[in-house]
Image (cartoon, rainbow, N blue to C red; front, side, top):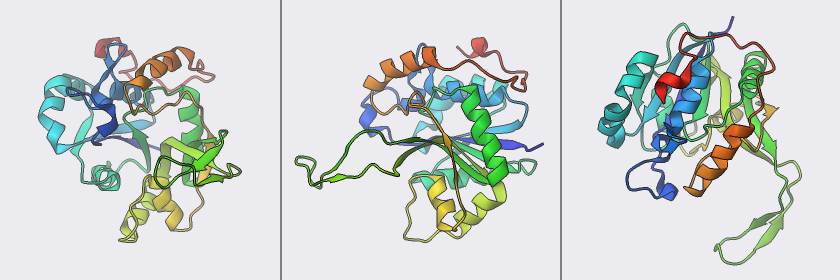
Length: 247
C-alpha cells in the first residue's frame, strides 16, 4: 500500500486577508484554526504516515505558542519556509520520511475538504504518479492590463481552476524540483512536473473546496463546511480521527 507524506503550505504573507492578528491559515473558522481542518482530514487516514506544516520564520513563535500542543499530540512536523511558495514546498519535501513514496501538497487555507475528493485524487496520484483536483472555468474571462478597463475577452474553453490537494510520486516531485529552470517561478507543484513533460491527471474537484483569501471568504467557507458530501467509502481510521480534542 502506498504511504503518503502530506505537506500543508502555510508560509504565505496573507496580504489580502488584512488581519493584524492572524494570517489566514491560522485564523478561526467556526472557532477552529483553518489549517487544522485539513490536517485532521489527512491524519484520519492510515495511509498517511506524516503531516508537515510549512510556516514562515516570522510566525514560528506565535505558531508554537498557539498550536504547540496540537503539533506535539498529533505528531506533526513543522518546517520553516522560504521566500516563494516553491522554496517552502522544497524545504518541506526535504523532510519527507523515507517510508513515504508519495507526497500530497495542500494549501493551508483550504479547509473544506471532502473525504471522497481526497480518496479520488490520492488514488489517481498513485495510478498516474501526478494528479490534482481541478474544476472547469464556467465564467466569462476578461483580460485587463491596468485593472480598470477590459482589454480582451479570453475563451474559457479548455480552461480549468487548479486546486489542492495535489499528489505526486516522491521521486517524480524530487526530480521536478532538481531540474527546475532557474527562470521558472511555479505557482503550484503541478507546473514543475508539467515542465518535465510528465502528464498530470486532473480529478474533478468542487467549488466548495474554496481557498480563503479575504475575510469575506470565511462566511462562504463556513457554509461550505455544512454542505460537504458525506463519505461514500470506509476511510482507513487513524487514532487521532476525533477532532473534538483540537477545537
